[in-house]
Image (cartoon, rainbow, N blue to C red; front, side):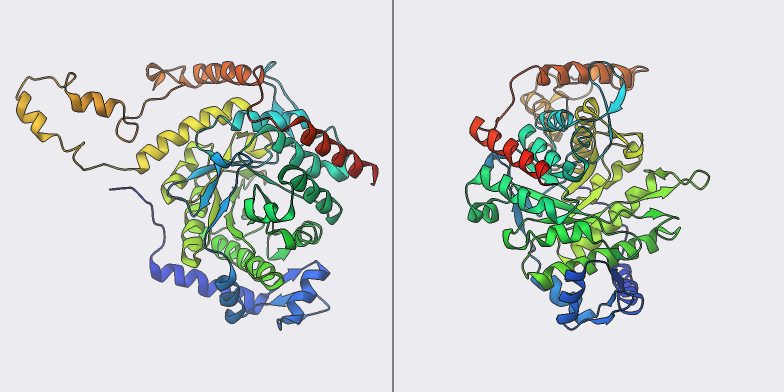
Length: 460
């Protein structure tokens, strides 16, 4: 039987929805974008025009949920990496967007560059649990007003898996579409293949931002999937309550679902969840066990509404229970220092952690290849099973007995396991970076993308 953690009863999920609707209908959501605000007004929403507050009814929410696709495919630039949503088991979403990186050659933390974003993609390409690659770190060596566009171009260069990026303003949007068109050849293929999605962060509490939202509304004709990803900090930008934080996240996600589905019914959306507690002394973000509970609750609410989901939870032993909630995507792999830096080595080591967690989630398998009581009878007291065909078979079956391809079993539970594992991962990182680029873009396409970025910089 497979293991799946549940944190809510059916009654409790209905209570989350009830509290959410109280927030949406009575408190409302601040919509900073004029385009989005007036679109909702024209759709019949109750508004406070002076304060730019929109109030949402149950009917509006249910109509939007009915319009939102319940399944679609996040395409890879290489179709081998296409990732259908919903998924059968969790896979990784590469995290983002840190401002620092641990240099794999010096070991020192430094500001990240565009070349580092490419390298994040190159390492993520080799993460077996990696399905979608957010940009990991920022390009600190490019113009600030177009850094998101450069990061999009860099992550596409680095990996042929599905990529996720951000846009900071509508100015970048047209160039982002040009980049996708340069790769795929036509607008029809952009809509059909969905090789890139965008991450959209509502501003907690209960605010839909202007610049990022306006940027994404420019993508309306291209069916670019949107990962709606609230990031409240428990005790700071959401109440000091896990239940109420989940209700607030739910309100922020659902209000965005209504917004996007009002502007274009059928827009592919992902229900995203990212949260952690505030340190009560310093106010700093702490990605602790509370984050896993919020992720588990968010996963259940996404399933309650029938939406694909992405949650935070990779990269920390305290957040590993998120794997047992079976979210489609789990963000967090590779990040360190509470989301302020990325480590290429940690992408690989946390890929290994994920594989172990996913094995655990498969639970205790009972079937013809695992019900081996006849073998016990045959050997009897004092026997041995190493030469049995069933032993040979199951030693080779990672769904029964998991062994790492990269990290020797002898490291398990040793004093220096973490140190030695990082050294092994560092050797592998260098090997990848010093080898050929996997699934490299054609030279003409890469040149076109570089030209688009230069043109965007020139128009600032």
